[in-house]
Image (cartoon, rainbow, N blue to C red; front, top):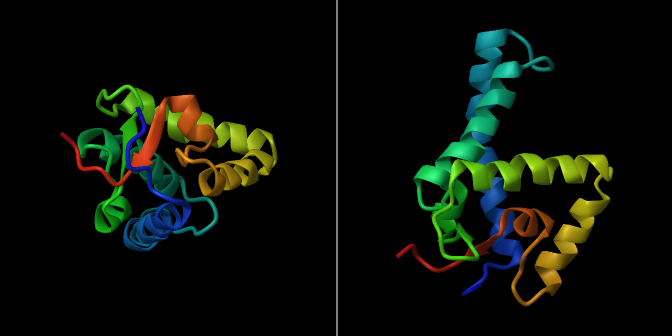
Length: 135
């Protein structure tokens, strides 16, 4: 059951905050480790691990989401786990890539227009983003 869904602007702002607070330092650390801005396996791996693990162990929050008071939750009320986050991030990302971004545009419209604010990757993983605190 979807309760207190977070809207488009909060979700976008949380993503931007994650990019600035977590992503930018990871890029810099990755450059120091690999010596390259372009072929930076460290940054890619660290971002994937961050996206899978942090919400799974932190009740659906990422740093950006926590700052804005929103989190990822499962529609069925269960805890968000690494498998859920894999479906949401990796499989959802593959769908967006395979459709050359068309599905991403559709997802943006879905979050803006749907009452439950769920996107394609939310449907894939059985999740939604909410302003409700964890139980």
